[in-house]
Image 1 (tube, rainbow, N blue to C red):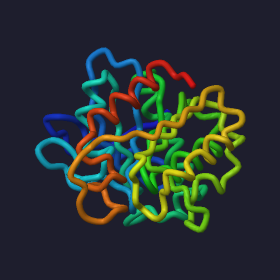
Image 2 (image 1 turned 135 degrees about the vertical axis):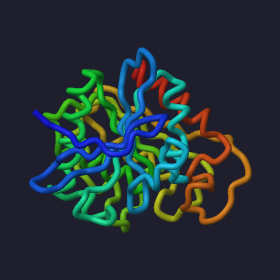
Image 3 (image 1 turned 180 degrees about the horizontal axis):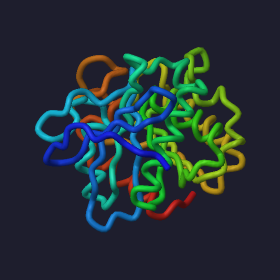
Length: 248
């Protein structure tokens, strides 16, 4: 049975450190919604993590992390996957490693035992490398489904989702992408290939969304179309609808 060592307990949620490998713990922020039917385990992009805990919540500007309140408003328990204690960040190669899979498995099992709710893995940008790779490698883990947002589509990028043998994924998958995403590594016109390779997923859906406003900064950054700027609530509402009732 997995134990955990509690860390800070901010007003909005709890920061915990879950033992995931021998001598290694992985940070995890958790916050519960009333009468939740599922838990979303969120994987941020870039080098991973969640930033500092400020005002009771993680401070990262990453799309998924800053959207925690929207997931809660949709009746979903939220967990933000942080960093293992033996690494300062998650590079694309570590996200596909046995060590990462061990950490992800331990966190999934911890969440499942805590609440018994279905656990969905949700990643954005480089976080989709973690989610897709874990979906293939951890087929015996209690994973209810996957959501890939702003997926790594460019074949030359380390960790590109479509470079994996996605036929091993046998749970529902939503591929969610902004049609104006200008990031060189997450081209929206290539997202369809991910869906085509999900040949054994019981449900698979591609959504090329629009909306939002005032993109700024790096096109691969969290405050551009890549990060669904100005349409966070719409994006999470659509993701949550799929989680509640997966359909092609």
